[in-house]
Amino acid sequence: MSATGTGPRTTPLHAVHERLGASFTDFGGWNMPLRYGSETAEHRAVREAAGLFDLSHMGEVEITGTEAGRLLDRALVGRLSALAVGRAKYSLVCTEEGGVVDDVIVYRTGEDRFLVVPNAGNADNVAGLLASAANGLDARVADLTARTALVAVQGPVAERILLELVSDDDADAVRELRYYAAIPLTVAGVDALVARTGYTGEDGFELFADADGAERLWDAVAAAGAPVGLVPAGLAARDSLRLEAGMPLYGHELDLDRSPYEAGLDRVVVLDKPEPFTGSRALAAHAAEGRGTTSGRTLVGLRGTGRRAARAGYAVQLDGEVVGEVTSGQPSPTLGVPIALAYVDIAHAEPGTALDVDVRGRAEPFEVATLPFLPRPKRPSATPTATGATSPAEPPQAAAAQPQDPAQPPQNPAQPTENAGA
Amino acid sequence: MTDIRTDRRYSEDHEWVLPLEGTSARVGVSLVATDALGDLVYLDLPEVGAAVTAGVVCGEIESTKSVAELFSPVTGTVLERNEAAIDDPTIVGGDPYDDGWLLVVEVTEEGPLLDAEAYTAHAEKTA
Image 1 (cartoon, each protein chain N blue to C red):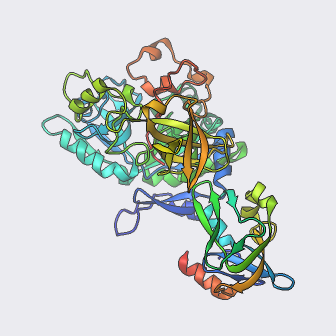
Image 2: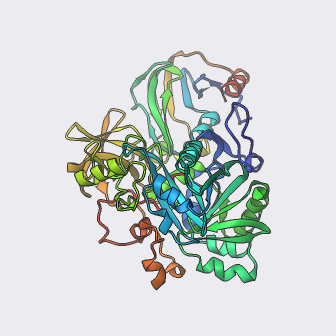
Image 3: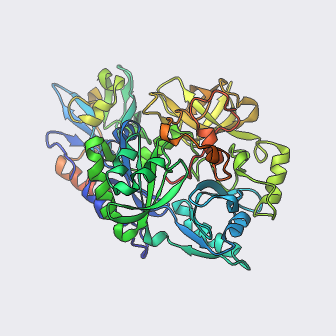
């Protein structure tokens, strides 16, 4: 990965993207493929077959040592020391004031070994905060971002594609790999950590590998997937997919000025850990005060009835009065209507509430919607075992992400099944 | 380089002008613009009979990711607008020079327009 110089960084797959004719965009300091052709076609391919994403811009920070779990308990809002080996969990890094520094996925890859995956633009910051938290503990922090590639294959045929690329001996391991679990496997001759995680609301895998193996891995997945409809997909599709799945994106739904409680991430925060953690004092106060503690607003989904899309920064109105602000919005390729995430005053956050969005001077009709906009498809082989269902490793968002659950309370609007990488 | 037709002239804002009979002209956006915008989802065009002014915003082109203002490359009165493209903006993305035209304008004055060669240089410079 080129990491020097003044321009944006490029991933080990940059030449591949150029060869594929990608349009590029600067994201989090990285020059990333935005789309290869039609972003809508890429989006649909992920919903109907599969998409192949280069996510090598995401950070990878490894924590090792007998007190690695304790370090994470101090630095993150969740209780990562309780995570089972081979499982993953969504968590947050907060400030002492309870603002969100970043959202991360943590994989426990060994008894004394964790992999933390922050967002591209926050990776250095998160690695630094974790290193500070290691002070006095038997824990070491190594930023592996520069030498790690991350390739995601997402969509209903993702498992079928991966099965083409592993040995027969490993086929069952792939089939049985649960949502929010990870296992080291050799994929197309490349050693990889294979994680059943993603950011699209579909079944799929994220493959962490040494940067040297990135191109081989990409080419193998592309070749195995092409016959069943896999296409390379860029950040534009990734963003529309995560929006349909109701997943927050750092810098849009989450930032230093937002409390996890405003973002509906209550369940991610574990206040009763044995030791205080960064932000625990402020977050305990937020919990006591209830939702919307810092602005009186809470994150909701909005579904439009017109054709015009709400965009980030647009005002949400009720009878001409501003009652919120859009954080992400665009037309949903799957639903055919505009969808958005917005912070709105708690009084107007009930699903079904009719609101307007000021779309460049015109009031466009929207309605507060239950999230996610698209339910996550159920995967029969992912049915939790009795052990898994009670495992402390079970990501809280996995329960929220279970599809077609009308009992799911609407007060958890953003359902982060993973962190914001797009 | 992206396809730039030589049978018409262009504004620096990536609109094209193709003279028709008399003083009327057809107006659209270049492939440079549609490539940059991505998949188009919504067009806001002036009504027939509306006055447009060269260099002044007369509508909007919205893609999945962003909204771009449409500047009129000419001054005059709108004679026709492409209702098919309004109904299905993907026509503009798929064929910006022919089926994806936007307006026919009775032109009283042209804005500063570039020939294809000059526009190509401009587009390369601003890419």
